Length: 407
Image (cartoon, rainbow, N blue to C red; front, side, top):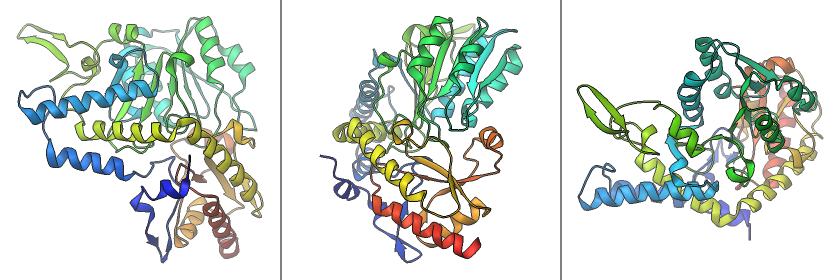
């Protein structure tokens, strides 16, 4: 049973007041809150078996190593990886994408090659490809977004020439909420001989992810958006691709042998994990995955659809408010970006903060998309497993107040 009131009891941060009013946290697209199960798992690591992994033959080091690697296996099952060796720990989705850009991209791309991205991407899936293109002579081109917030699939097919080597696309937009038709994108890209990287930072926390069914080549996501701690992310990639890629960083733990004349690399996944890793964070992410698995990702997604449908209906009743992205909750996630007349989004967010409501305001690391929309910034409310319809009512009331004060 998906009981939101019961779930909220697991999140101590939600039981506080801000400016004298109960906290309404609507910024999970930036970073989610953490349940007690995750907080206590990390606390137990530091209290009982804090030690470096893979290097100690004493008991607590072996316990830490076992917990660290067990978390990797949990994450692999969570996304249905073929092997836990395909699961690479990084700091976040941004580092995961950079790993692919610099390890795979620099060693594969050449002048005349094309990387296809989209106009709705987060900067983390734009800037690395621009940098790699500048160093290799490749080009980055962007699939257009239409007025409803969907990708122009006809334009995508026209752009999918034999020169395209990689399609780097977000699974779910962090601004528009759009859930892209990635199965179709992947199939068509593979038919054209291109690899596909999915930025799943917004989708992995909110819906079932099956890398085998998706048939993508790379998948990146962050722990902190899916109930886990900051400082831990995941890159999944096909084993044969990872085997052929050179290391991203070098140093301790990613080596097999080092001599004064040269070095050889460790086997997967440690080949891409130089230095002392984020041990507590990885173990904490494993606990977050356990929590989500207990809830059931189909249930998580269904709750989000219902909450988003309610939000679209309720917020569209606010005078002067414009929502960006698809109006069908089945086609989008629970990130709702909007403008309120001519009021600056930062001012809207400030008024809402006075009401105890936490939202995000700005370009959300998607400046090109905002340029496309003719906007400097938007206000964004985003929902997760612990949010309730009455919190959306509080948001709508706060927006009415902002309009009265500033409109």
